[in-house]
Length: 164
Image (cartoon, rainbow, N blue to C red; front, side, top):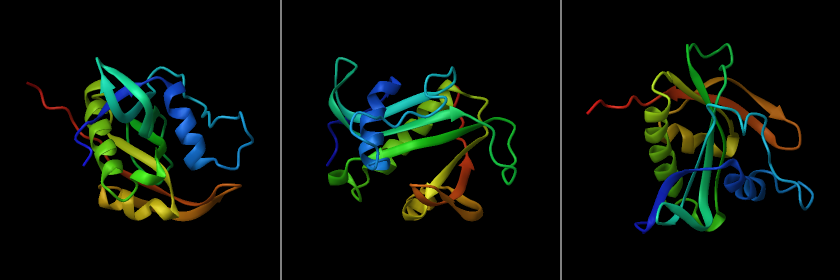
């Protein structure tokens, strides 16, 4: 169904519009969902969409970002990256596109950051099943993020790149 879509690494500016539309619809017009660390070294942004000559063509169908950030104390890891801002266009949800984006971006992250031990996130309660189906485990009790809703911390072991 999405054979013509590819996952590639992109700049933060590419992920912010979809991240805002899906995750921060309450933001006033013109304000984008910018996260602290978006521009930091060791932060990686990925998008899934149509690609031509190595460049994304048009708007992405889904986006995700990974930032080097220590996990909460309930997760033991020497080197952890936080998954943030995963968003998929409404018309593409529940079709496997999010899992494809997650799998491909984790594979690319394993090459870019081989020392990564753990991937963790603060998952919305509505996304817990999605993350669980993709290898994440819950850690701790649910909590409220003002204006956004209930979340729970989740984690999974990072993928390890295979030497060729």
